[in-house]
Image (cartoon, rainbow, N blue to C red; front, top):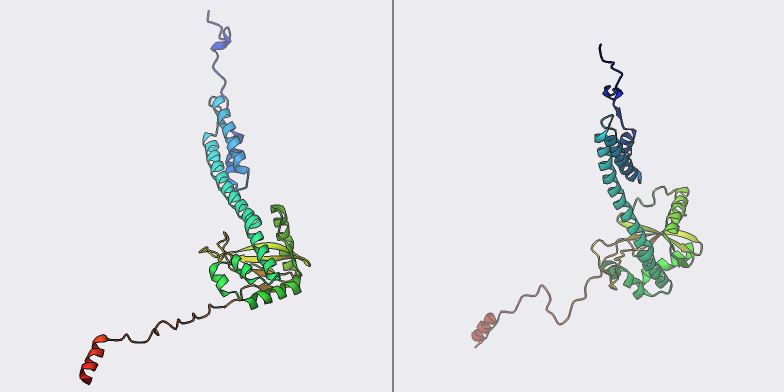
Length: 269
């Protein structure tokens, strides 16, 4: 008599289950490829869960390579976005905490016709070019166009809000690219009696300020929604020629030759 094959169910071969790809691994890869903030963190999270699921499936689920690739891409893009966000936050914080107060101090000094205080906030090269006449003309133009200076942005939220408001007003006024003529410059919205305007602040790349400050500001250009451009240090100004020292010989004068003087004296005898 043959043995009943169903007498011991544990002797039956395991059912063959078709292998499938982990959905979480696929999602991890997709989120890792899509370069969007915070997607990288989600890609790493889903990739790790997918690896645990693939290991627990005992070969029934595949996608280890997809999950690992998604984790790597997620980490890389998270680091890149983190660096970009950190750098952007540092620049915005510097603009609200350092540059805007320095510009406000110079605007207030210009209103008081305090040329020395204006020069103290500028870089050494710009301070040497600015004149009392330039400060007076700058203040007159700002006062006529915008009124007295009031304050700079109080927070990052207000800074970003006024960027949209002021640049939007400039665009409606026909100036679609107000920053097109200014490179290596910080745009900072400043509030005046008649409203907000954009102060363009070129920064000296070589550093150094006349008053020993931390921000080497080269100029202040005020742009308004009406299209006005008010400049503190006029373009094309040059340093005055140095005054020659009367105690020094002229640079083209030949040096006296004592030997020739001696010969002439001997010949005269």
